[in-house]
Length: 70
Image (spheres, rainbow, N blue to C red):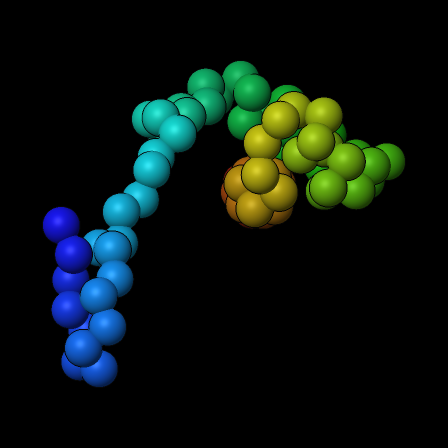
């Protein structure tokens, strides 16, 4: 199927190819990652690479643990 833009140019519709379902991380993994981040021995990037996850959840889980400990 082709879509005609306002300029009259035919383009393909925007199709996204998803790799698969979103990964759900168990609480034990979240705790291990967050505690590793709280130790401060490694950077967030290093921890994310080690556990094969994106750096953003590492920071979020670290923040959650730190707030809960206060």
